[in-house]
Image 1 (cartoon, rainbow, N blue to C red):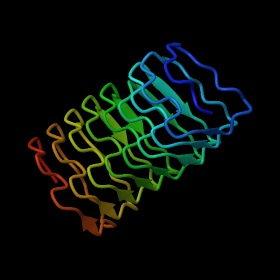
Image 2 (image 1 turned 45 degrees about the horizontal axis):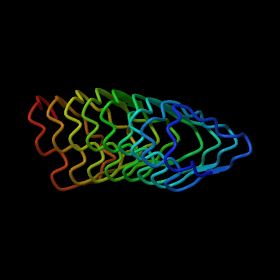
Image 3 (image 1 turned 135 degrees about the vertical axis):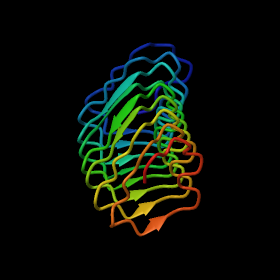
Image 4 (image 1 turned 180 degrees about the vertical axis):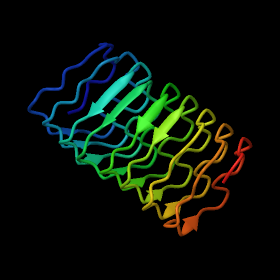
Length: 195
């Protein structure tokens, strides 16, 4: 599906017959506040909801097995529900979601892409599922409100600049499974009291 350019509808119903949401489908639809994704959808393309600044919540159903890069970048999301069908959060997926206050990564997710939550400046809670083994470069960069992060025991890699500028982060426990911590991963974390 590809939403017609220039429409100002505040809500849109995707037909149950739709199996794929195209790249750029709802690009910069700034008036859109509600768009339920039906269980028939199997893939969401790159930049599909990029810049939907009025879109406050989204449910990614279990049927979705492919989520494109920067799919919700710059949107107004406050709530995200991630289904069990996808195994990774792609690069830039929720970058610049400045209204997002919390995120729970389910156990089916194995990797968090580069810049996935970069500049989510109001993010106050991030819970990583036990399946996460890789955190990409700049994944949580400049999430300055984030007070804590709990790493699962199977985690192996923390990318470069992953938590750079997370100035409210006070303590972390890095599990024995971690073999790589990227350059400047915790640069600017001025609130650290224990590691």
